[in-house]
Length: 139
Image 1 (tube, rainbow, N blue to C red):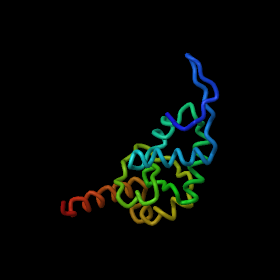
Image 2 (cartoon, helix red, strand yellow):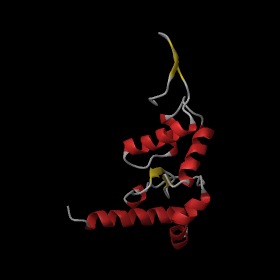
Image 3 (tube, rainbow, N blue to C red):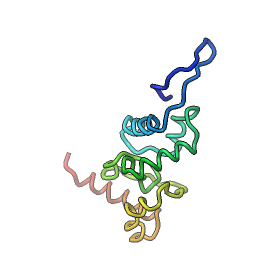
């Protein structure tokens, strides 16, 4: 549940809170990703913010954050903080949905998708490469 929302009404049966502003929602989304320490899926964000904001508003906030390079849309469709793409091992997905900001997605991942032939192949390539890197690093 989202904290820091102002309580509008409260009694023994119900608590009514004010929905966060867009600026507050941006901070909340970044905080959720930061607290998890890894990129989060649309489903995780939606679950965490259910009852607080609708999907359309969440999508608009994510698009703004991606356009400002504060959030990175990973190749597997998850959302992480800038820099997380360096160490993140993508997760194979059954169905990859359209990127929220296609131009940013193409700039970041397009070369890899073209080189491997598909998003699925690019995800597998990244998984293989990241696992090789982890094995090669001395502990």
